[in-house]
Image 1 (cartoon, helix red, strand yellow):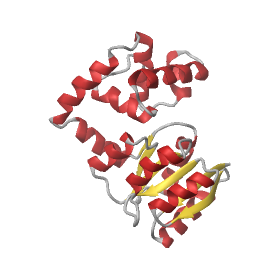
Image 2: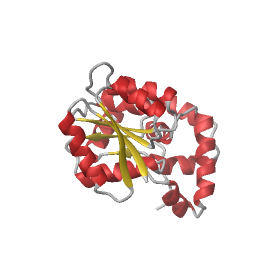
Image 3: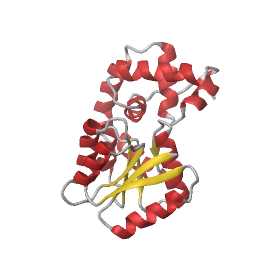
Length: 220
């Protein structure tokens, strides 16, 4: 079972998320929190696989809670859930190690899929959020980010760059392995090596670097 923590200051929202998630046979909502501070403390003392954090919460907002949770409960995969899709929130969430970003008007099945993806160690961005990220990458500031990203990628081997390019496409380890004719375990080893070389906390940050650098896969 995937053990989930839901943090939102609105009880009805928490109840709705709980109802959606528990409709899946492999997901169990084991804890709830009404603010960011409570979410961090709950994650610290409760066995949780995935945490869903709203951005707009009292006491401590979701983005701050995400950063705190990274220190207090580093094994917990965090999905940010919000009604706001601004680019800066998306990039801040991913920069703090978030496993993904969902809008509250996402379809129920998308929410379930995102939780499963996060629990499996994969990144998840809703289509609406992806458009915001793409817009950001096309902005004037992307030039400076691209130069920095290409500098950081310079130390990767050709094979590591191939794996990273597929991370940039959002592929799972299994799918990347199929594309590159590698075992999933081998891809996982490459991913760990890439994260170390790039000084990234997670595959989402590495994927954003790949996109900033304009890295594209040559496999179809």
